[in-house]
Amino acid sequence: MKPFIQFKPLLFILLAASSNAFCAVKGPGRSISSSKSSLHVSSYSSDEMSPEGDHLRGRKSGNSDVNARHIEFADLGSLEQSLERKQRIQQEQEDKQRFVSYGDDLWNMREFMGKLSRKLLKSINHGDREKEEEIRKELRQIEHQDPDLVYKVELEKLHKASSEGRENDARRHSMVASAARSVLPQFNLDGLWVGKYGQHGYEMINVTYQGDLLIAYKVTGDKNVPRGEITFQVDLNPLERKIVVGSTEDPSSTSTVEQLQPISLTEKAAKKWGTTQLPRHKGLGQVAEAGFEKNQWMEGQLIIIGEEYFSFAWVPIEQQIFFGRPSPELALKMLRESGVTSIAPAKSWQKPPEMDASVHVLKEYIHSCLEKTTEAEEEDFNGDPFSCIWTGDDTEECYFQ
Image 1 (cartoon, rainbow, N blue to C red):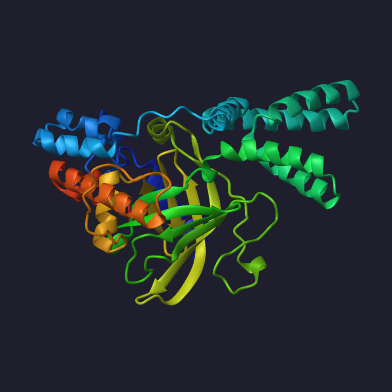
Image 2 (image 1 turned 30 degrees about the vertical axis):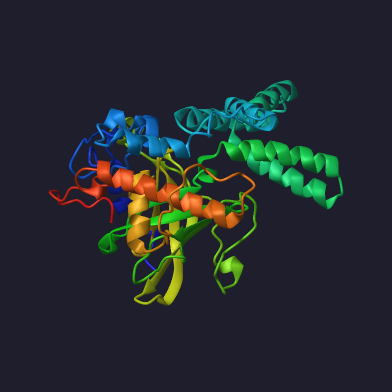
């Protein structure tokens, strides 16, 4: 296995190479690219995705077609939010305000905490008890704003309280830990992502969690690692628990828990990404020969680029894949072409079924809605369906393989 130091220059080039990076989305369905070697995962506005938005997009459809679509949504008026949902939204807002968000504010706060820690040691060595207590108080106040630190500390307290049978304390620590976890970007990657797997082209993955273990499954696969298999996994638990899915090796030898220092960006790259550091986490990436033969796990790294992007690097083979959110149109296209979806022939519905109808009837109705939506999008989509994720080929550098 090659040492990581051989991979680091490539990683740095991928993340910090001037303008050869992602392009920005500007306005509904439009993008402005800073270069022709860029990755763009587009999104569409709510108007463009709704039946009422048909006339805004210039769709050539008769009134009968429009009315037929409206029948499906006739009884789906705006629903009043439940008390539980309102409370959950309020709690999420409070959690975000409670902790410092990922970015330079957090990095600067941690740097300041480091300075305070050094001052604390100095005051302890000099026997200055008054200064020591003053610094400790200031450190405690600041530490409560660091979500990573709070999550780790509260997990430790939770496990201790649980082992000692202190159920009330355990519940309290669990609530605080959950609040901190909810604002950490590495725990908010659930769902579908698309990345370019070298010569295999674009593939879709689904990120899910088993506790603090992030698992990325192939939704569309290739001849080496087919769909349904794990493409990579990352143990994000800050404590010394070692979890590896699909491995028969000794957990201690395949631990993904090792903490990595964030990647420091150059001034130019920092200006582009809006942050001076990119957090990363040690993980495991799966590789295999054709036919999923001789599959094995190798050292990898999950790199958090922001809310819209992340990348995973297979370190020994020096391969890094950037992932972005697919548009609904692209997701449907990739699912259909890979044969993942099996949509029944559309049935004509005069009105939606009742909510207490059988599961089979509800499934048929959902299939019908999906078919109509797909037809509408295909009718309205111009150009290359993959234009919303695109890389240029007129540069010697390769940033997405």
